[in-house]
Length: 369
Image (cartoon, rainbow, N blue to C red):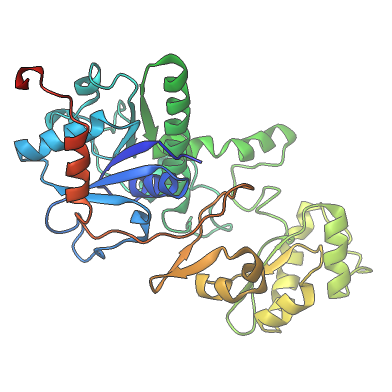
């Protein structure tokens, strides 16, 4: 879908490489400028799934000759991805102003936690810090428990990488129409707060409380995770009455007078305990078999390896193995194009090819005759 689009990625951590991987999955020519020598974090694999489908050139951005190569690459690109603290790219001589004349259509994607201009813009942080301050972490637990989210998914990927990709694609479309590039200021703090708007819309109906465990989606017995006999877990979220009725039918609770009162908050703690006791009597797969194919909105909690073996994955092939590594296939899917996983490059693997391309496309010097 993005054939003919070139993205230059300056090696970073987390959301930047993920955003570049997604763009590569969509068909863009992504060239990653890896730093010479060791990875940013010691012990990281030389070939990461986040680099799949990309090309790699290794440069030392403290060396003037290598900075010049980076500058020429960025001049040839539709978009750039960088994840340094504000001001670092300018100090390297690679800030947005450098390319105003040589590449006016450049979409300059900047990925940070706190944004380019904020009271915390020069302060270090990580996923949990950004989403805790944005409000996105608040509901990520049951009542009385410390908030906890799946590592990186809400902040780095949801609030960061996905918003960076959306910004870059919007910038490219605008540049194609107007001839003018833009700077994309993608902050995890901003994106994770923006994702809260679906929840915040529930405040107008009185279905969202600032107290955890008292809202429509985190308080009821029919919207939570239950532990099973074997240490596994099942999720239940039968919000609509017709799905809740199916849930009660499967459990033989249709005629129970308390369970019939689905939306009575005063009963939720008691009914939660009753269901906790019930699910704890059988192993996870017992419940998975019982509810399979029904509209009761119950599903087992699987790890990625189990998910790959599940019948759902047999048809979708969402979890795949490539070069011996388990990874998720590209998303979303397109009707006219099938996606095939590509290998991740070694650091600097395509350096000579990329340098040859730059030389072949370099402007001719008129003085050379």
